[in-house]
Image (cartoon, rainbow, N blue to C red; front, top):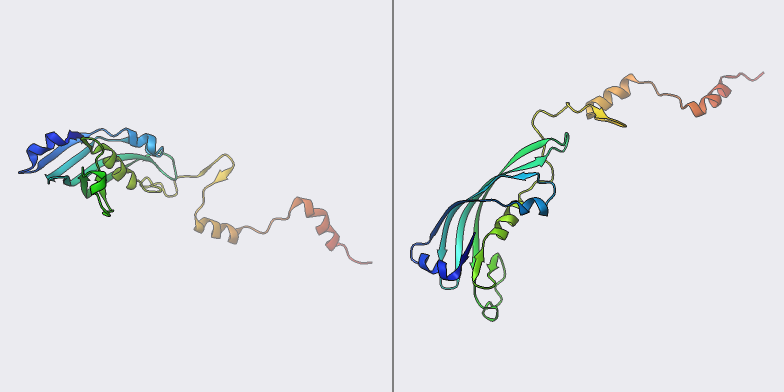
Length: 177
């Protein structure tokens, strides 16, 4: 999704409608938790001024992420409504305006890095596959248990004697004669 500033000048009167699909595979290299990214649907309208372009966009895609319990694939839908501003004002004329303005270097407006950032910001810390609660039993050297399982185990089990201290327990059983 690249446009030269000269190309954009013909949309100055009515704006530039956008309704396209973009493949953003670089998102997977920037965040290794992302296993797959479906084609990103970008829809919206960009209005142009003398030195900037304002885009009201709806970005939607589906990310494939690992389940935090089972490590299986989980489909995570992403829907973003955003307003992005691209400006091609000279560096000395920018002034003190800070904020969410993407300054264009050169004569080409590239929306791809902005879309990648928007999607990366939506990736959750962890996702869970539906109906996995209680399915995980354990593995080699570890076990999965809920808080209720731990409480039941405390009620049922007697305190077990450490085998290293078994001889010491016999000492207290002896009577003084």
